Image (tube, rainbow, N blue to C red):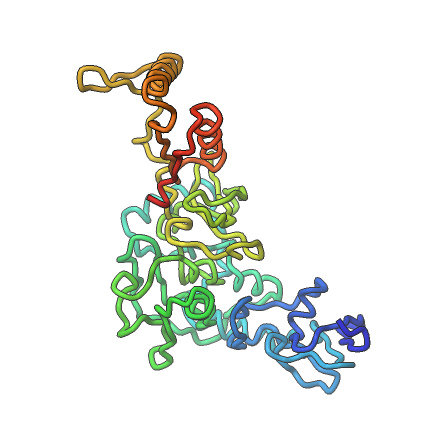
Length: 374
């Protein structure tokens, strides 16, 4: 980094690398410039207009797409900048169904609301991401409402015919993050802009389940509002009711970093860990949506032993003794390599590691494989 090249942000000098944008320099130095449409690993569109900053000349420029230059001086929260951001927030709030200023529900009201949702899945009296919405955060930060402005009531129906994602076009702000996440990050090219109807569409405007979508959920994680929501999460849990636990996805050997969103000791949602290798927030359909088996009531809770063609409940001691006796007998009679061990993506990595050590160190065989390769 050339120490001779500096940009001054709010009176503080920062060095920068050639080609860096104002936003990248600011983020690297913990200077907050709000964004809605900006997406790392994709080109900057500037659709939302939230990242405007003021140049020394008084000109407003978009920090996400303006390249830093030597001796550039900018302000990130000048009166002119704040006024511009407020107007953009008002424009987005009035563009559809954005009841960001609505009060939250207490526990009693929320319980009744969930009952109503089960009766009518189209219920929209409360945004499904209320309290976890970037547009709402900015409206609160700059104290902006859409009161007095003509609203645009969307006539587009909610799309919920696929098993994973609900698309609520009335809450879309056309920021384009989902399009760039799909086309540039995951390179699935399943969705695109249709400015004629102000809508994000698939080819021929088909439902996602009939398109090229592979349901990786990259668009859901990128969406800053309530336009794209996981179907199993929508109106079933609020984000502040969960805690995030970081772990490694066990479905294959890539090692994707994930957050388990846990409520009452149950996994209710999975998101990718952004900024962490090897996946940098991206996940496949299994990693993001394939977790319901964890809470399945059909999971075995006690060992079973088959006798006379039928399973019966057994104690752990009885089951382990039987397995040890059988494996020892096979090993003694036919040799260690007559035994093979298959492990599963539906148990933890730690359990798979134990199975590996058991096969190699105890059974003395290298015949071990994982269901992701079978």
